Amino acid sequence: MALHTLGIWLWLPLILLCPLLLLRKKTRGKNQLPPSPPKLPILGNLLQLGALPHQSLWQLSKKYGPVMSVKLGYLPAVIISSADAAREVLKTHDLACCSRPPFVGAGRLTYNYSDMAFAPYGDYWRQLRKICVLELFSLKRVRSFQSIREEEVAALMNSIFQSATSSTPVDLNQKLFSLTASIIFRIAFGRSFKGSTLHHDKFHEMVHEMEAIMGGFSAEEYFPYVGWIIDRLTGRKAWIDRVFHKMDSFFEQVIEDRIESGSAEKDQEDIVDSMLRLQRDQTEQWTISLTRESIKGVLLNVFLAGIDTGALTVIWAIAELIRKPELMRKAQGEVRNYIGNKGRVSEGDTENLPYLNMIIKETLRLHPPAPLMLPREVMSHFKINDYNIYPKTFLQVNAWGIGRDPNYWKDPEEFIPERFEDGSIDFKGQNFEFLPFGAGRRICPGINMGTTTVELALANLLYCFDWKLPNGLEEEALNMEESVGRSLTVSKKTGLTLVPVNYLESLPVDNKS
Image (cartoon, rainbow, N blue to C red; front, side, top):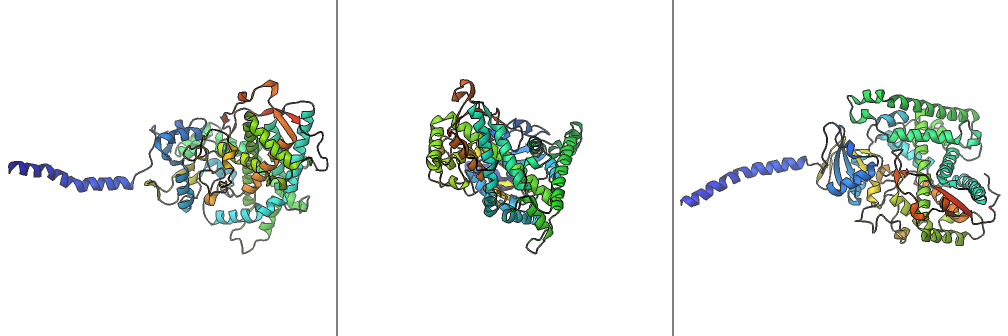
């Protein structure tokens, strides 16, 4: 009897504590955040990001999971590093987290978020995106600029042909950045650099500065009460103001010149023409009023999205092919067999070059131009994998890491274009293991504009020339390390300088250059 009573007394505390334990567990569940690496006081996890944050975060995710909390100064952030988690964020809970966090540099350069890429979610953003999708970046508009792209690519081929004739090495970084800058300049303003007071080198330098500001570190963002002092002491605020005034003066001059002249030099509408027309002919279709700041904000987006991303993709593709000569020969064989003696690849030809498109997809998988998708700001609470994601959280998808996830990709570090042979995986935002342009409401609206240039440039480089490393270097000597000098994009640590060898005896001269 005594033992029986003792047993009851031993169990009684557990019975009484059980509701408390359940309540505690329930309370903890309500506040359960994703796992996190150890944090430092004040700094949080900032020091763990390193020089290549996408790589550092990918390594951390292997230990702490595909949904991972980090603290960036005072800023709570969640990093997404798997296709399943990305689907939850970009599809299931897209509306709950499709705003943008306020950033000092972005706010200044975008005229207080008057653009599309960095504007917070709301009616203004929805209407401006609709204008961009329907009026500026539609497939019809992209095709209307075909002659511009073909003329600029022809000029590039002619330039490289001259270098090949004298066996002179070519700096492909410089050549391709000039190509994409020239194309974007003409699409945006309806004129070439030859008719501008801004040389393309100065123009590209200005774009680089804008990218550095957009992707760089402002102490005010992570330490709001004292960070603004740090930004002033380091000169960052003065630098941002200086770049803004240079950019704004350039945009103002272009817009004023267009208003005075009344039209572009060609019969087709460029982006400035279109925006001025929409501003002038406001209709009930658009519920927002386009301002001068809106026009300049969209121009900023076009430059940031259209210049470096296309050039970098072609550079990475050529670099990968140089390292695998058998793939280079296969790609060149496809293009040359299809084009024959025509002397140039036109835009209409690229859709008949499936291996070329596999190469571009594989390049975008391994080297997405923006390895970390532009950050989102959570607007309303939701859960991923039973973890709570709260409003005002900074949320970022690691597209670079997802593209190298062995759960979705066999031999993920290897460059294997054939993995896309069945054509079932695309970059339009429906395959969450492959997100070079994002997905959901914030997917890049200029995908067609960018990929068309990449296809045309790469196809012509493969058709017109054979390529070899200078000074007798072997393929294995090519440095494939990354450098994030501008945090929005990821480039090769070293430039790509190659010796072109002419495949054709001469090039056509009927294209304008």
